[in-house]
Length: 416
Image (cartoon, rainbow, N blue to C red; front, side):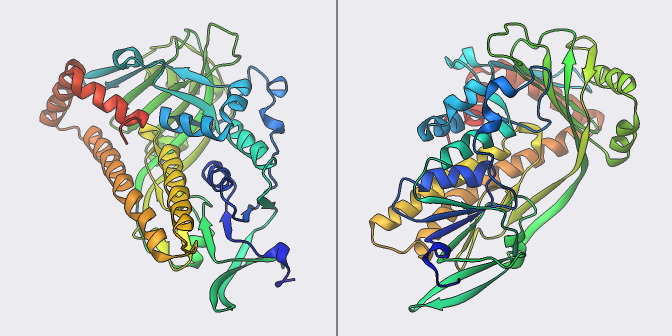
């Protein structure tokens, strides 16, 4: 079985989520044989069909997709499937300090863009990517495949990675890419060293219906205990008035436990007050989910023939919604470097090729991570002087058109 051609590939991608599936689609442009493994079967696009979606039921996990990520999805031919399912483009964002008067209003119109970004349910993104993968001749999904262990073996003088599944399956490739998320099994098995720490916050996510329409505007209020974000959702593409939002509420662990214990009515009242009733009464809320927030960054993205991408390489506070966009930029950079190396006659596991990817992405990811850490710490400070300076700074940035517009373009991925 180990020597069978069907179990030998040029590259194995572990993880068929948003980043892993995107990378598989990008690498399909080459002549490489790509294996895409995951613990769960691929959805084959069935969940992206809009008639099957209830207009009052949304997935609890959504992503704020930047224009750069949208352009990537367009190039892969999957954006239209996402649009046909459900996408909410947002054209404005309001950010304000709960402990003062400082605020910033971002607008796509200020930089002559149609929108700042798009809010999309994660399952819609994955379904569109999996539908595309089903059409590719050189990408081979192997599911379910739960990695149990791996080893290096010699194959005709080349070092090959052999992955073992918990059910006895085994596949081989000279290069394995770990796109298996924040708790990456491959990262752990390969003993990648990481720098990590708890944010000492939990994130609560759910979907709500608000009294007032969101007008395609994202809202974010910074509080002492953590930021609260309301991300606009679109129930149906033809529906002009929208009242559904996905929320991400970062808070202290004890507060999260208490909020999770509230009845729906009590939770809705607490949430409405936390947003200062900007969208009126919270009329309805879906099931709540909570998870701890942890910052993590691998000291290296490359170790022998294993490469980390996306959350396997770095996790970031969700306050700016940049996590998945950073992962998609990882996938794009790695695909470009691999294809560049192949054209130059290098092997896919050539250290020179892989380290080019690391150099391209590590600095950018670290700078964004430290920026988010700085924001988090800044807004947690309750010293009167710090609060005054913070509010003055926000107001100054709001009035400084060139600086504010540069921040907008950076967040949109237009100046990466």
